Image (cartoon, rainbow, N blue to C red; front, side, top):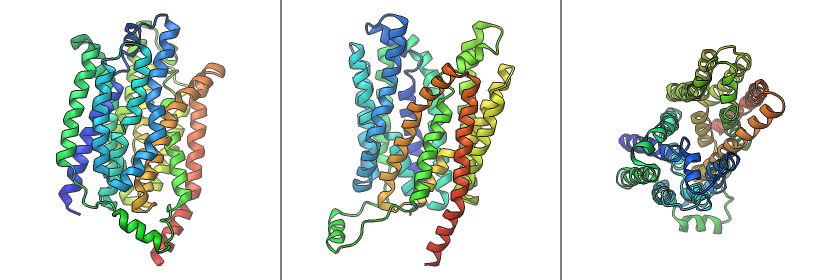
Length: 408
């Protein structure tokens, strides 16, 4: 493979995913205001519709991610990225044209159905990068995604006051169109998908379908992807209320809560590529198991902090440990499935993450509301440690399988 091609692909996907994540998350700070402008009144109704509108994208994305992955396997990753760019460009502009909250919710569903640039980037980078560099490359891509998650709400808090809410969506659509152009011109796939005629000949000859690889390991990585998002998102519903117990000045609650949320994202940005590089050297399963265990243990002191700075510091440390998980999970899936199944299985991984993004806040809100906020940290700790133990038990079997395959 031409060395410059996969590196250029990585650069385009990095900035493309960064722009698309910003476009998806910049709505967070002003979503309730926009919903009120669309005719919804009353605090309870606005909060309810905010949850519906925001969650609609992830619900739709979870349903169609495996389909886009399967089509990427069949027709190539680049057409899938172009499709996702065009879909995001159109739907972001349509959000700015919504006339009522029902239209807004429907368009947010379309964002999830027609988008998928970020998940498509994972498939392209995983498939086109040399295997000995894949975890590092996926770590770099994860850094761009985390940076988008950090910058999106920040820009969403600034842009509407300068250019208006509706114009904010039009500007975001314009930047996505530039990303679409860069994807069309700069990305190159060096290994085109096998022609349909060859697949038909293979089936006519009675050949067995390609195996899905190490099924137990792949299923474990899908569960790990879900739990990673649960761990990230379970704290979101309760962190502002939790911070209220730690600060004396009520006026600083929002600011401190924002710092606590951003600290984890910043930690992930710092560590993602470094832990990916470490995984290329010592093995992805070791990094996944270690990161899960460290993240779980760091949740215990978060349940017993007595000052806001302690929570912020621990969230940053947890972000450092969580940053290596998603790149290593993706790399492990890539290494344990046949080339013709990479997109499909990574589509399942994306769906697993979306499930975690929906289930995490529900889990955190239920435990925090019915048992106590401190128990959200402890319950999430138990989930992560159980996942770490399961992966540790699976690792020897995975190594034996690799040795057997090499012997053959």
